[in-house]
Image (cartoon, rainbow, N blue to C red):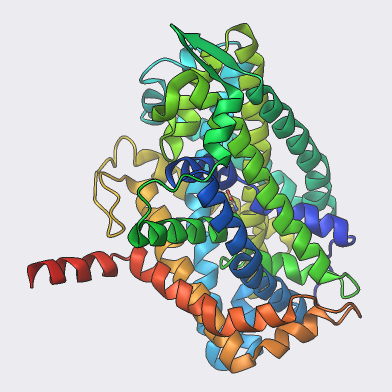
Length: 471
Ligand code: PFF
């Protein structure tokens, strides 16, 4: 037996994989998309897609890992020599993400310390976020602290490090997020004659808003939901292949995967329940900006508006986000370390130290993207005035990931055939309930969806549209 690392059983695997899946994507991106894309309408589309397309990609990654006992770099080559290049492509994604994820982890840590030291008021002031990320030293220091904690967990190994850490942190995360979401629903603010309540905010979130719905807008919502799902489930980046390779053969994979999908979606739903009513009550819907703006600019203003209790809620919120971000960054570092251990035949501890040092150097460069190396570019996806971190994120999430998913579906669906995955799902003696959906999804529907997503994010659709407009 070549690899000795294993999760102790199904529960350890589910918590670690859910730890990877639940991250800033669930907390800052999902609520924003739901607010932008018609509330309940987005939720329905998202749920339908998780159960079909998300489930297909997650099943494929985990089953490849468990069946081959390999990490991404070698797994595809072990399945068919000619497809080894797909392993290299897949490995590139965590390598790229590692350069900036710890930078965001550093930002979250800084906000946590700000609330811990009772300075939540300062965090709510205009310009606080920008002046922090453009500073020369502080973002680097916080990034290094965050990276050190990540590395410490990975250094201890799969069962003693990652699994043990997830067993403590994930339940704490659930308790915190449920507590804050319930608190959010009790909020109430009167503004002259108008009273805005958390329950009204909940309505904005849950009731489908079909106003102005055109086929084009519906396609936009579909694309948003799809790209959110595969970032959120950590698929097509080698992570779930690596975690799959640590799962014992007697584990009922179908059941474990359903639990991971459930946890990831449940936390995203709760995050929306926590953020949308709170932002609605205190700032109206204008506070619902995308990305960092929501978490680092709108939320501190909301905590400030809550009065004295806001200082505690803010502290609980950033603690919860640190937990979510740490378990995700652990999964990225683990994937890099595990793959490199195979290639260089070096033990875990040495490899972990080497990759941590390289990641630290790369993350410093990303931090400098907000001062010394500052630039602004427009991306083919349509996003304007973007910086280094956004460009790197665009390459991994918008270009590489849909492309890798597309190739993986074609490879598994048409070269290896779905049966190859189904056999692995049933090797423990449990039947694979969603066999039929899986087969149709992997061969026909998911590749098509990935092609659409790829065209959308690389600007092919926009280009064609402009051609037609000229003609
Ligand atoms: N799945 C995580 C989230 O939703 O935030 C994000 C993530 C984790 C991205 C791990 C990349 C990664 F390697």
